[in-house]
Image 1: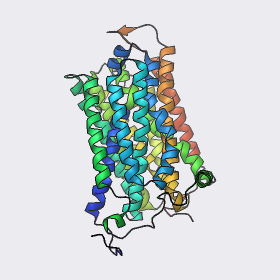
Image 2: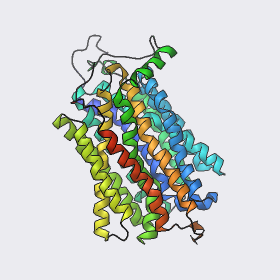
Image 3: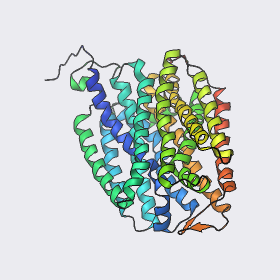
Image 4: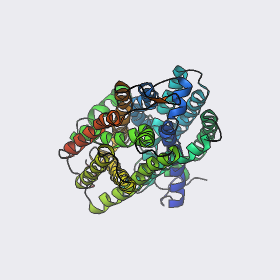
Length: 432
């Protein structure tokens, strides 16, 4: 029987369990986001497409993901994480099945569109669980753990996925993923609760949302209110350059770049792109803790972006790096890119508490604008500079083509660093 007047907060093991179900869904979202990186050859061959079309197919995930972010933030405040995450999982399972069975590019694009739109709820839903179930001082640290979970999914979409594809088709793997996602959706519906008081424990914060008194005018007013704060605009653009660089390289073009210009086997190239994702996850933990411990957001974030930029310049613009230096530069780029996790705590503290879900959706929308724009743009540049060379029916691109495309990534990182100078420090304290 649930205590009508709970006085004790939930035990951490229960908190982590509830949060962990959402984290597993987020992990699957990262798997889907990065999986095309090791399927480039198969997808180009099956659908008879070049780099531009492949970049666009991969970006269909981000088109719907970005488009869903503000609605997701609002739904997180109205529906709560339980309904949001379980509904997202059902749609994700359908989209994954459509992609797996796609006979044409149009069906594959529809599948990616459904996958991206449904997994768009994962991170915001996790942040809502974090906000509702954890003590407030845990927010940045748990956000870093969340990034770590996501990167675990991305790593699984690297070498392990490549090894599985050596024994079975990408379509079979995607069908299995669809079934697993559907099962997880049922588990989240049954086991996640929106607030600790739903399990008989005291809440850390006063419950909000639930649809009571929410109308269209109120929703639009909430969005308008979020954008009255300067940090919202700046933190919408800043992490996009960081994440866009990581997911454009590790999520799509890194493996063909490394196999073509460093003559590495595809499996070894996948290990290196996964290394970027692993170190980014570790960087998220480090920078989340460091920012909380220091009590500052802005200087920690600036250090991270500066060093990430340096790492990417070495990898992308210095040809024929010794292998050890190549690995070291990728580690630096990935580790310091983890500083982007500060964006969420930084933004949440920059607006009133009742806008926590909305600001999370807005910032996550900005984050995904990076790969959404960069993946197809880099692909378009590669096709424009293609010199007609192929291998086994797959186009090969020159070093000059890759460097021209990757220069767009570096330019966005420079912009991110400049914009950080104009952010307003919160000193890890909530406004209002």
